[in-house]
Amino acid sequence: MIDVINLRKSFGDMEVLKGIDITINKGDIVAVIGPSGSGKSTFLRCLNCMEDPSGGSIVFKGVDIADMSVDINVHRRHMGMVFQHFNLFNNKTVLQNIMMAPVYLRCQDLKRVKRRNNMTRLRNLFCGSNKTALMPVTETGEQIRNEVREQAMALLRRIGLEDKADVYPSTLSGGQKQRIAIVRSLAMDPDVILFDEPTSALDPEMVGEVLELMKQLARDGMTMVVVTHEMGFAREVANRVVFMDEGRIKEEGNPKEFFENPKEPRLKDFLSKVL
Amino acid sequence: MGNFDQKVNKFIEIFLEEGGYVKVVEGLQNTLLIAVAGLLIGILIGTVIASVRVLPKYRLLPRVLNGICSFYVALFRGTPIVVQLLVFYYVLLPVIGWKITGIQVSVLVFGLNSGAYISEIMRSGIQSVDPGQMEAGRAVGLSFGVSMTKIVIPQAVKNILPTLGNEFISLIKETSVVSFVGAADLYVAFSYIGSSSYEFMVPYLVMALIYIVLVLVISLLVKLMERSLKKSDRRN
Image: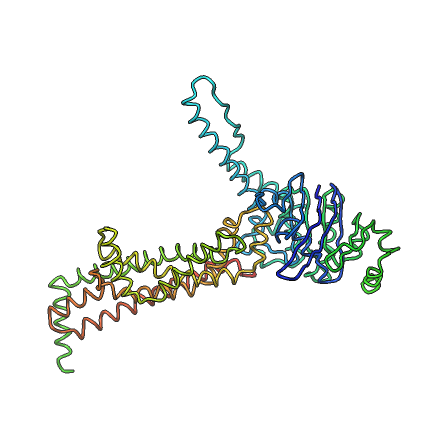
């Protein structure tokens, strides 16, 4: 689904990613591990062009999104992202957080269709016989809003937080915030979700509930790329583990082989420190 | 001070019986109109400029826009407001052949002027919002503009509300120079009362009182607004 070809990224003179090649298939759960400063977060943020790549290409469903002329916003709808610090919208309630993007973007699409229909109607006035057909308008803004609200409430029920729908994020615990952030990206019905160290800012007690939700997603067949320090998660849930160091992918493999029989000396060293 | 009572009586006489209050009400209206309209225009201009100045700058267009905005801010912060009023009224508008009244010129100039100041206030407000908020907006597929207007700016405004209140207060006070271009504000009204009685002490005292009351009322309103906007910070 995502083909990364020779991806490079520099900040000024600092080259952080020095040519990364990887293919992420549908249903893959890729855990990216590595020492800090190895470029794993930058790699993840390049995947949805949160950081614009300096070179190389990222082909997502057949389109090179590293190309600056592509409208990245369209592609980001299909790529969820979950941040280390949750980044829930502080001025919105939990429900608004989840509903905002789907409602806004679908209403925007609806408006675009209506505008185009109006243009077609105008053109039809002058065309006489060969009229162009109108595009179908099947829903109203109100219907979209209701539909998204139901979907959002269903998602909240799934994580057991439906009673928190109308509170502001400042009243929630870290674990609750992160689960809502995950649900917020789920509400866009994405093809892949990128996780940027989702449990690093949490109290140890709350790590479990977030990992449990991520495991559920994995069982449902969601494609996930997870930058993490949770070796347990990488070993149990991921089907591929990637080790990054100094801006390159140093080793990649299935978790069993990766953890039991590491080849790269740097990886052996790293694993001996974290396990 | 023996004749202070006399002065007060004289003032009251002119104020009530010779139509002084009509002038004062008119002046108060104009003062408020210029300050409020100026503030609204200023917020509009300031928000746009601030948004431009926080755009990522690796493409040409944002850089050019940024240059224009810096120039604008430097121009309006670098000259006194009286000079701006005079230049607009006697130089710029006659040159382009626009006939507008002193009050309209004042609204325009105060709007442009406070736009320059508010842009800096707004920029600091936008920069005080966690960059993660913008990132989260972009990550769900919203554009820069939408993330800015729906997520970042509402939070920024909450942070800068006290400073914006300050700006409004100083605007109200600065409007006392609009008589330079012939707009009839509070100062003009009280000068009129003073000069028709040859007695300036009481009218100017009353004028000072009115300004103070105005400012106190505004501070109170700002405080109330702040409290209602704080609701998303509360931990209930």
